[in-house]
Length: 151
Image 1 (cartoon, rainbow, N blue to C red):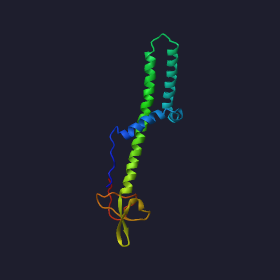
Image 2 (cartoon, rainbow, N blue to C red):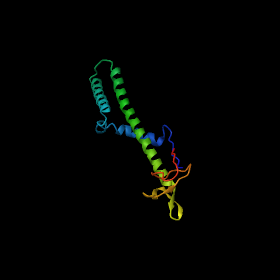
Image 3 (spheres, one colour):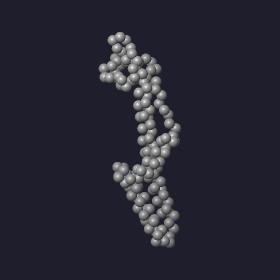
Image 4 (tube, rainbow, N blue to C red):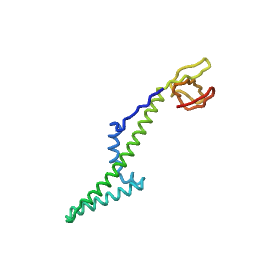
């Protein structure tokens, strides 16, 4: 049975691209696909611009609250983008592991002469294979003879 690679919660091969993608996803064209996050982006930009204006004009009032609001909005955006990029990275890693497992799986194809061992990727529609308890199922299909219970 092919083994599926298990990744730690913060696997370096997933986290580093996710950090990079969380900044790339700040692009307003990408954020516009998610209306809630787009509104947060607009609010973060607006608060940051107004904060910059107040700092340049030396408004003379306590700007700590404004700084906190700006930081929280930017943190929210980056964290949401990071979480989305992590989920995408994990999905891609799982798909790659499953694809790798499929290419390594050996099938016992039935022929007129008996059984022959072939790679799962060489199976075609209409091929019949033998699968016993504990073996990996080499592809999609229908149980023709016997019973089947799949984990």
